[in-house]
Image (tube, rainbow, N blue to C red; front, side, top):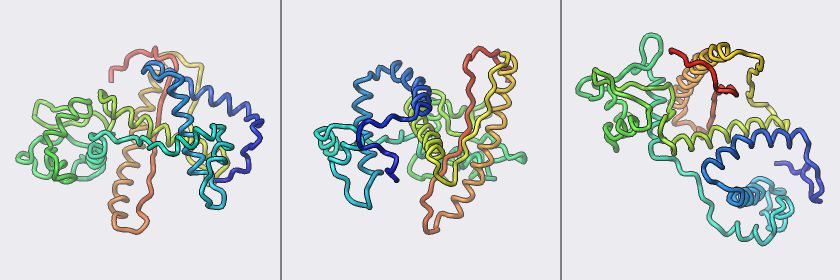
Length: 285
């Protein structure tokens, strides 16, 4: 990464527009932290360790090993703290156990022709293989992992709201993606992953790097609650159509690329919707 725009004097004044953007994007984050009892000193220490980590890993000069003195100069963190933080083990974000397997299962269920109807929508699956064979929830789980029973997965999915069982003893997905309704750890994981990638895409574009990433939105601010409700439903419908289409194609490509050299790249495609007031009428749908 180039460091030509970095100040080494400590007197550099950042663009006011960037500071304003930072204040805006940090407001909902700070609110979340306060609700969860995460104080400023805790966040300050976390930021200090991240400044050191990123300066050490991403701002190298000609591939040379980074020195504590240069990290201190780049980050503004005292050299004593740079040394201490460099010796401490980093706490990696662990993936909740239900996610790695759960996300694979939902992706397969919503993209494989075996589990789709004539309109390309995922179908309810008989709970037991004795009822549906490969085209059952038990068959779906066993096609991805032989090491865990389908009952264990189903119990967890029922707990976090990913699926439900209907009156015919069929497992039904509640959504088109692995989005837990009640699992805090799972939601926190995706919160970090998705916002990281969205901000990374925006930062890439703001730095003028090429080619730019897709980062677009539609904004209106003179709407009635009824119009907002209509747009919320439209956004949900069209957004899920886009996600399902990309998921289906990505699943096919990943299966095709499985044995190829260089098949280690990742993508993250998402859509979001937000309205500021949250006072719209409840939809019947």
